[in-house]
Image (tube, rainbow, N blue to C red; front, side, top):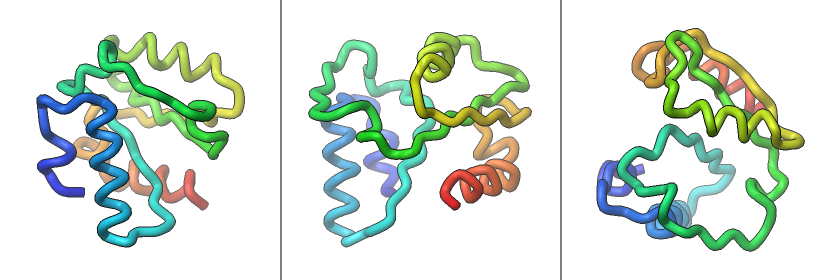
Length: 115
């Protein structure tokens, strides 16, 4: 994904989502597995999102919690995820930026989630 899409600080959630879909379609990608990280800068708590189906479209979902240290700002999200039916939960003993702090372990976890 281009840096202009993932790092645009003024984006709204709906614009961000449309940008992702447009890249997938323009690049004629298939078997895409979105991997989210915290979306600071996208104003996600005040931008409305029009969801047509159930959250995640009933596809398999896994939440990977970074536990060492645990990022306190995400406690509400973690509680929400744990309360949802059908979500898998995994933990990685690293800080919030797992892709920087433990990239190999995170990659193994992501591959395991998709297989």
